[in-house]
Image (cartoon, rainbow, N blue to C red; front, side, top):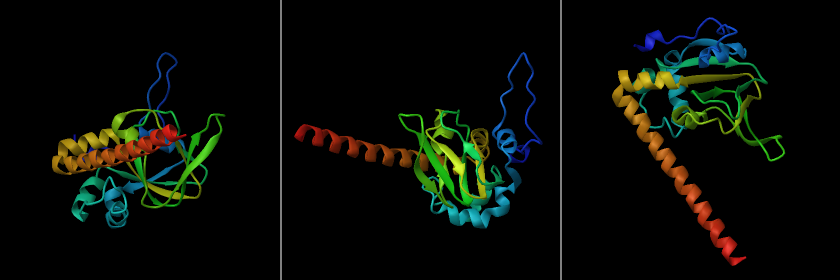
Length: 198
């Protein structure tokens, strides 16, 4: 299957009473009111500058950005839309091109609590896209925003059709996970040392 076969469907899937049809990320995003405006390759110059700030994509040259962009779609989202919901299955990630996104996680009282505010250049949802685990937090647009979306299915196509590019991204992912594991381990050691001294 080629990248050209990936396109946002016209609308949400219908649900038959006897079966539940799982919607694609493109169908879900359209149902939320996001408007697809084209392939990310059409915005390659803008995206290339943003990707340099994103650990997962830093190091891609402009040609690699164009190749990856052929597998991604760009959407415009109004303010106040929950693009990613905590606990849902993760099958896409997004690169915030413009706007601001509130990153919220429910606390022990089940109340949404802000853990970050994402700005242009931030990647969101990449871990769940790769491992398929439930989303760690919710992402809500604070203002009209533009996002580039890479789905898990599209990433599999990148690995098949552009193996060098796919391998480069996977290597970056491994480095990113390793860095996060080291940071978590360092925090755990500090916590254990502090608890022994107390």
